Length: 536
Image 1 (cartoon, rainbow, N blue to C red):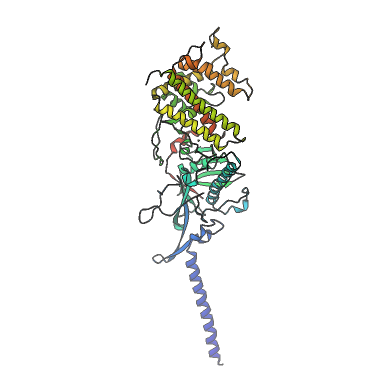
Image 2 (cartoon, rainbow, N blue to C red):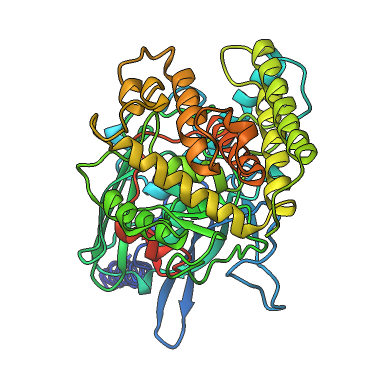
């Protein structure tokens, strides 16, 4: 072979190699223009990574990276209206966490207690949030079914589709081009009101809540929810597991009205309509009995003023040196007297002017209350140490009897009058000194709230009822102190007072509150607030 041919072959090889290398460099440069593609993988967002794709932009001669992340919405399980819509104006794809539809987009939490893995810090925390919500629905349903199977006979609990408080997700396509430079992982989207509601559903309690600095911190039930402000984006939350979580009898009752409790509002039996979107506050200030504001001490005091209580009562509530309760705070008693029933029948979850009537009418009403009390006593005797479905249903039925009487059989003005007098009398007696009661009267021989403190835990309840009927009721219905307050006082006021007190006791037994779940003053302003927030 001639030397010229060898040189030509070598030159061809070198030029071909250079061409291939240049082509590879060009392909690499195009592929590297797909910023963020390598950061969207199964470790970061399992189940969601399959929706990432690269689209070549011919006008810019580069790749654009698109991916899907969830939008979280808190709504009834029967809801059909969602923020993301298709071309026809209908709600786009959605799925409820905890519903019957199975999807890889909702990663199931492990059956055993979630462990704390510091090596999984590359995972997006909204994946952990979806798993926690799924665990809440799964574990609470399993616990409820187990209690019903091993408890007294009862009807089947309502299915998930009848829950009026659930979490749904929609897929929203995003581009990595629009990601802020300080964010390195895809983020989920929701609103400030929905994240507060989700935190309540999962059993978290707010430790910090500073809107001016965008600093939020909630802890509880083995979870931590924390937020800071991110430039070019807004308020960004992170959700982490820090311990064991439990979703049994203490899970939030899945009813829509619980949303208002999370912000310090209470819908009462006198409210006829409900706005489930809650784009505006139910009341700017307390005016009537349709909605109570009990979130803070000042709001409670304003609510009492709206009921007609005197200025001394309002001052006493605002004075932290005064007593505001006996076995439970006075605000809880008012909540039990007027608050709507949150409990769902057959469910085991507990965390929600007419003149004097005739003697026959009074006896009939008191007999109905006695019958309901007898049913509750029989259910207690048959039940296990935990609250059974028959017992909770008996309490629920008792509340319905009281509601029917208070709404349809007596005037609202009379109810307000009894409430006003009852609260003023109880608050006055709670803060009376030993020298205040009149000397030589039969009242001196009757128990007082001061004597209640000296009683053993087993006898305090009986002592409280005795105080109510022997000292409080006569002052409310104007009964003769030397006679029976049930027969000698104003009959209508007696009936209303008995219904309110009986309802309060049943309501507080049927519902439960966590001792660490305290209202934050400025949180009330965020009910229904659709300000976008993000979970990374």
